[in-house]
Image (cartoon, rainbow, N blue to C red; front, top):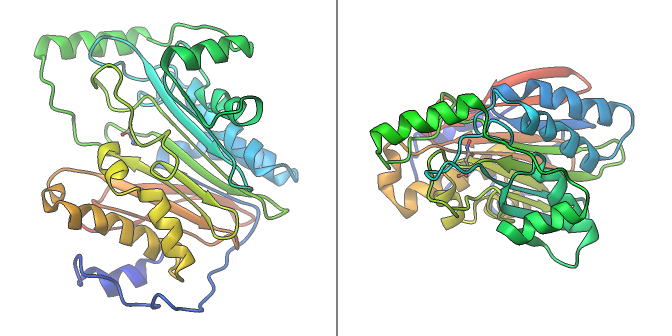
Length: 321
Ligand code: SD4
């Protein structure tokens, strides 16, 4: 369960450093395995696809890839893959990454015309000497690996972009459940291997070439083989400025539960710039190598989908505001 009690105990402390558990805590936090956790309540189909892999004794990395691909293919998800909202020039540009149980990673940013950036990211990890490819070079690599070139701008996305052009207002909308469901996913398989994936079309109407946190290892996603993993969603610029997912994992290493660690990373965003109290949403989910999971968000409205041997459920996380 998300540590709501712990949150209530500590939320009144506002943004002061957290003392519970202590940095030298020897507490252990354990859950069940296999388990898959993903961002936003919209991710039930994705969780189901991941669970199919995990419940058959499959590999965590296969589970997260299969899981997030469901949303990459879903034209109704306007923030991921096919059907993702374009940038201000009308181009759909995608960001994604993966990390495995050994801390290997692959990442792709500003990729156009390829429906499954998460699979391109995995190929970069396994079949290239690099960790990250961007833009035309990433596309060239994807095509060389046999990924088909596709138009990802759906008629709905095109219409939404055209309506936005009429307004011509460049203020990025506050990211929350009403307008955002980037998918981040963490899985621990039966053999105890932990992996993660994150994939998004980023902020709608962004400047062409804008890259968010989602493909940045340590910001949008981080896995430490011995500790666990974390993944972020929300306003990527703020996640990047605080290297959020890495911070969450390091706080788990320091002895905090997954929810406590996520809360610390959320509070860091407000500490760094108190103006982020107004309108900014960032949320983290975390999973440790014992199967304990948790999450925390700046504001209300964020939740996560969890599937483990007890079944699938959606749980809201603690939040600051
Ligand atoms: C980004 N973090 O590109 C992503 C957006 C997001 O739900 O998570 N949306 O900034």
